[in-house]
Image (tube, rainbow, N blue to C red):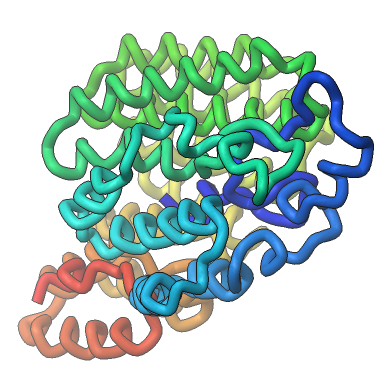
Length: 389
């Protein structure tokens, strides 16, 4: 999970990590009380929300997860966090960093060290009226709830993770059921969180080939997508098509993909939508083992968007299936050199190293050179074992 996905981007009316936007209690407070509070002020800076929050956000964007661990440790040691919500905000970044660095046991231990469960009054604004006058609601960042659900699976307890995610989904939907009390922005934020949680649940079921459950969840999302953007609808339909393909329903997948083509033919969406259509066509060609046609579709994608990592990776794989190892290696090497920020991920590196092993006798030396380059440019969480040295 990317940190900026779980920690909502500023600037908006609510802070990056506040899942329950502060609301005036009943009876209403003075009209200006919540509007001027830094936790609820759309014009405040990140640093008004929490101590040096902009620095943490920048480090996360760069993938400097070890630096985040150091920064959180210094803030705690030097007692720089003065309000309860600041401790939870820094805990969120700390847990994300530990998770990114695959230190899952440490992350679970720190999460378990909280004095109370996440719904405890200890984590409500109204429990600290001297800090948050006239503000109510939970100060627990949504990412903490998400990590609380996700981390057990990292330690082998998949069922606990699924149980917690379904509980989290119920929690999110309970917020939406009371949406009449929320602003339009808050409603949209909770809807995005609902989709995020459902997609996470789908991923867990899909990894265990539980296709029937995946199809039901995706169709439920599609049923609720009225009013969504064409891009969001296309992404959902594509996911449905992918599951249908894995389920063996090739004709169903073709029909689903044709709906996306219809959206594009109506002039809805830009390059990203057009590339989605081409990638879907290429997948159908791959299923039929027509790798030449698949390569042509991927070439069209790359011509539109030279940073389309999926198209570049899959084109290289198709060339490998066509026994053109030389060109498949060139495709990935050129892309890594040209757009390293978009292309540097473990899947692409694993594929490239597999091609080296097939093509060269001295593949160990070549992979070592690649590994040295990666160590200079990759973020902290890049898995160095993907070079298979």
